[in-house]
Amino acid sequence: MNFNKAAFLAAYGNPDQLPVSDRVEIVFAGRSNVGKSSLINKLVGRKLLAKVSSMPGKTATINFYDADGIHLVDLPGYGYAKVAKGEKERWNKLIDAYFSGERDIGLVVQLVDMRHAPSKLDLQMIEFMIEYEFPFLIAMTKSDKLNKTEYRSQKELLKTAIPHGDQITMIPFSSVTGEGVEQLREIINNISEEI
Image (tube, rainbow, N blue to C red):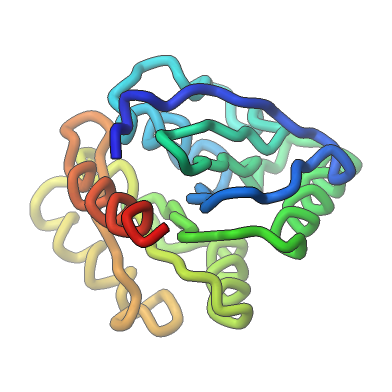
């Protein structure tokens, strides 16, 4: 699979706008400011494919990218406190509509900031994926911001803090150093080859 061929397709802000799923979708989920856009850009080897913002809560739509025959799907980040209640409800309806539709979800990449314990919303999302049997893994982002001791302890913490953590694939990831990029590409490649 050629990740460099990735191109922006469309952004949808309303559940009624979501297109019919006609190919495998690799979904990126996580709280606001966890690094979804940076991860997507690093994955496809492009700096500006997904818009990176220093302000959390900027991705208010579900963004679709075509990547050599599969779709990369960037969900709005959750948990940003400064977003109006009505806007949060719209995001929730949009995400619910996405997951409850008949979609060909090959993998959900759940992003969790490696520097911190998973948030209540992170855990709810992980439990949701376990309950509804969505294939998923966890990308532990911002791994470059930890020293060696913190890195080891946070890796162990996340294994115990996340339900069934010892059975979930967890990949330390850094959009700065590139840690985890090849491992994630290989997993996505394997999914695309099964099509």
